[in-house]
Length: 81
Length: 245
Image (cartoon, rainbow over all chains, first blue to last red; front, top):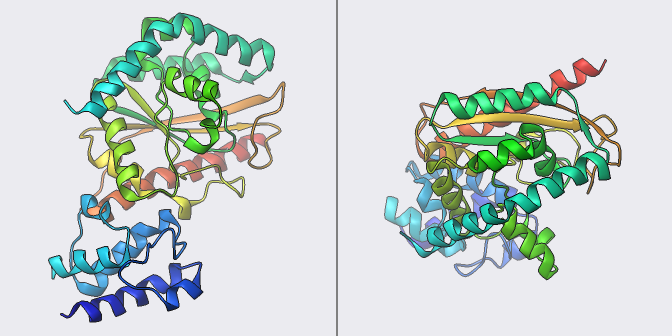
């Protein structure tokens, strides 16, 4: 799967959790999920679980520690596919 | 051993050396200065002492969170100065929000001496993982970690399942055989969250020790364990209010 397609699906999954919807419109690989999109840190795990369901992958606890940017999500999912 | 773990052991040693000073002072402050009172304190202390002696399995304390002083009250309710000076590992490690205790040098000294592992809520996952690793390291050595699984003071004044921070479950997963002492603490005048309980507050506390288990793996397992703990706190909250009627 292409990175651009993964990114599109990642952003779609993030959408309901994002408090700053304006920032979401210009989101790219360097966009910070917590700081730029204002996603509640407690909800980040729900986001990652949604990635597991969407892409039919399993993500370990330790992998969540690497998720800060949208690009991190794309890289992590790409590695698991 | 990692530098971070060595630093924790150094902090523990400093805290232990100074404990004959700070443990009685804070106990006296709560008891006579602020005139706080915890009902059935002897029973709570007996239960905690029994939990400490009946097994060497790691023990975590998970409590609801309404004021910045909950950890002080819980620590006091679970043991007196004599008990802690004889069993210093029973004095729980607290996980305060760094922003609340880093504004002045004396607050930073206090957090260091009073067995605290500061947390930066909302920080990146690596920072959170480091805090969890510190608590795991300490729990494996017979120390007791105190965690607030809602991740902060409850803004509704009630335990919120949706606020369950999955890190608690991750910590439990990383500690085989881990026991969790769930504590529901609330003052009679505590209608919602606040900075501090009022002077003369009378607290009632409920305790239940559980060993959460899950068949789920990875993140789902951690989240399941966290929600089990918070669900237990919700049930204890209901019982607390039922007792009040």
